[in-house]
Length: 350
Image 1 (cartoon, helix red, strand yellow):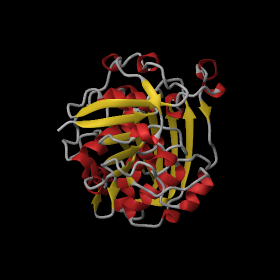
Image 2 (cartoon, one colour):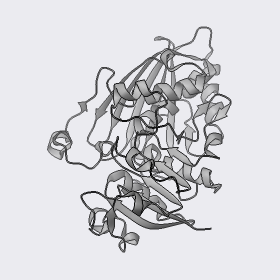
Image 3 (cartoon, rainbow, N blue to C red):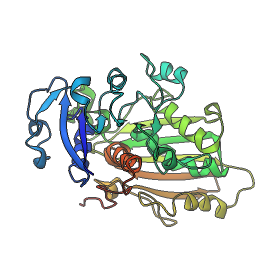
């Protein structure tokens, strides 16, 4: 069976990456692409690397144009998806790559985003530990999927095994991320100009203000069966001059009486059978270059007994495993297709 797909926000970075992956998917027909200010223009003018989709023209983003497809993927800025999702009840599968349907707490939404709160959808991180198993089981019956925030899923995948196994203290977590500016979208912003980011590293959303914090707390709480209030994290992202990629360094206090073997076994047990989340051998740590273009999260684990902390270093491509790859992987599961269809573990080098 071939599924028809409409992709909104198709002129942006996330939309473009979703289209790149879907263009190689044998079960998908990309029928419609939409945008706002770029509507009426050829897709190829905004995504010149997508040569196989040169025949498509960007249409207006309206419920009428999006309806009538088997699948709709919304790749819109935060706060803009909800106005459309309410009107897409006839669409069998809708995937939102924005934040509108990620959070279960209206109070958390009000504190970090503001505006209208929309119902939470099934979270699109298949490998994430949840009470009783993995999130992929919840995705098998999903018809509404919230793709993750790239920083949030990276940190959550980094720490969920330790939290779920009780080998780290969830109330003492610190994460610092080096991130590429493509995660901030394609809209023109002065602080993301080349002249502003080349040759420098720029911290932002410092001091517990980043919007992905409640998403991380929610995910780690789901892994442990605890309340989000029990997850305390200091989270600091830093923009660095690479177009795409996240390198997340997370540390947490080791729980009382836990051995080194128990710590490593927590991560090995969680990801030993996974294709797209891989724990590296002891003493090895990933680079963002190793995951460029791939749907992989590579994890390095160190045990620092002098500081009594575990250090987890995780690399992802923010536009693939962080966003578009997670959306396509979740889509495959929901449709009953092979989970890795149109996705790869192989990066691009140099």
